[in-house]
Image 1 (cartoon, rainbow, N blue to C red):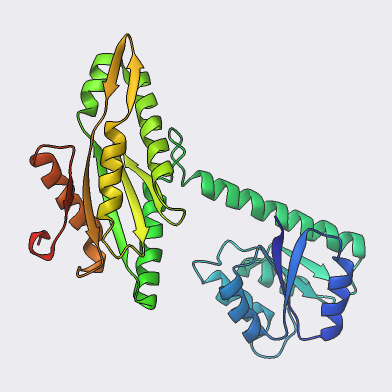
Image 2 (image 1 turned 30 degrees about the vertical axis):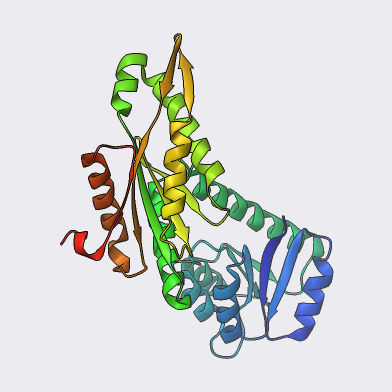
Length: 298
């Protein structure tokens, strides 16, 4: 997969030179000809590396760097300053603003490639570690941390596009009895089977997370029916699972609470789905309950 490099420099000659020097690297280079354009493109592209000229008209490279590092989405984007014979004070200033390196003009081709490769390797490792921190180690699903972040993003997208978003909260019925009778290793295998069923049953755009313990959560964007058919399909799929353990077949059921932005308060979706899940448990388990405006907890 190609990594993305944003080159911000007001010299067209520098753009042509760098493209020629880096043409054999596994990267895609995007060009910005001013600090202002660079800021806009950084926000839209979220690049893997920014090569940033120091000496540009307002805003100069230092100010562009400061604004990028103040942006929560871009704070971890590595920046390499491009500069002439920079003084020690300038280098220190740039590094204190958050840049990771300087490349001095005129560029030595081998040094340029080596520094760009090192920065991109660092970004790749940072992204890998960040992704691992958002994955549940047992099931391989996204974890609660990722769910919280993705929920905000999906709500924002739904608001901008007049779309919809459904949240499904799911809880395995009587899971404690499985751990008590057969032990936690068996319980872990059950959770893996459940995770696999959920992933197989949803659409590509749906997001399945392990919310905690035996509880799972699904974000289902653009579900005009409020995701009720999906929830009912998941309940039916769970009933069909039989896990052989010690000459017994473990049968599973799941309770599901569903809430949707259709006719609902966006920011309370999880609380609404949780309340519906609680009702599903109270009403006998192995069922789906849908939140309504009248049943939203105050």
